[in-house]
Length: 153
Image 1 (cartoon, rainbow, N blue to C red):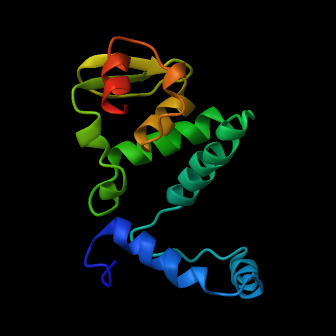
Image 2: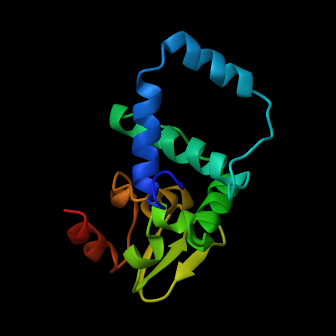
């Protein structure tokens, strides 16, 4: 983050570029060496890897037309973390700015966030929305969905 001067997206890009030239065997060995490790980067809680697994799993399966159900409790914890994360991690999703004026309500668990026009649906669809994904917009309902659809077109 320091090397990227506080710019989260630049940090991710630069890290990806550095790893792109590493031979596959070396990358595989590095990943295997991390298995079971409890080390985390600064500011990272155990919830960030959970968010990654849940959301990126959907990034892979939804375009393929496959179903990958998220456990409701895990999706709820992840959605809460995304909604409540402060700076500097909050810059990854800009969730408060993007969801300003909306009240998000899960229909399958006791979770809600925000104030304003209603958007409701399953917690996994709300988690995808919070993390900037539009793939689950069709699973959401309420008067606020029209605003979301137009802001993402």
